[in-house]
Length: 213
Ligand SMILES: C[S@@+](CC[C@H](N)C(=O)[O-])C[C@H]1O[C@@H](n2cnc3c(N)ncnc32)[C@H](O)[C@@H]1O
Image (cartoon, helix red, strand yellow):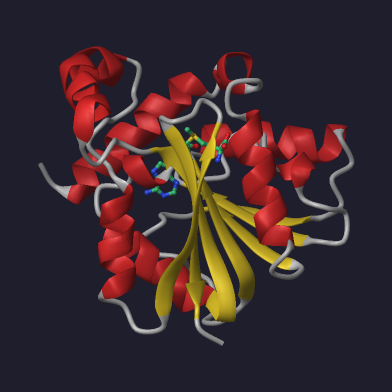
């Protein structure tokens, strides 16, 4: 299966999801979305959200931020554009179709890159993280929020048993924090500085990965 095929599959899936995504996820993902937006805002005003979707996170960035959102799906972005107008989100400076692995944005342009509930969907997450590092200013942070599989113990066994069920609703159990840590450990100037549980704990986590200043 080629990467191109996966991207087209994602676009088709999210063309359908765009119609009812907010109804399903507006409450369920709110804790992680708020925490990711706050962590990004603490880094500085210039924020990139990769996989901005229908724009559910946009209202959580302070009005002093300058936020750019990108997404693979034009249909999801259309919903985000409606929110920017309806909610008067002046902190949003641009919304564009873009692949996480090929960001058409300048080097060292952002204080923070947020990736809420996206990284497990990207066929090559390490390539996407390297693109995010490229557009990050020295001292900036990549902030990932996602379902993260347990590394070991009983929880890992329970998740392995439930994996087929979880997969039917689009969540993976095999993406783990250790994969992000391994990328950071082998990438110049990058280190994981915090891993915190978000709702629903212990299944979902927010991870801050910092670029040395
Ligand atoms: C679960 S939604 C999350 C949306 C938003 N961040 C939120 O928290 O509500 C995942 C989004 O990631 C986007 N996506 C998936 N693969 C992508 C890629 N390779 N590049 C950019 N966006 C991608 C999808 O189109 C979808 O809008």
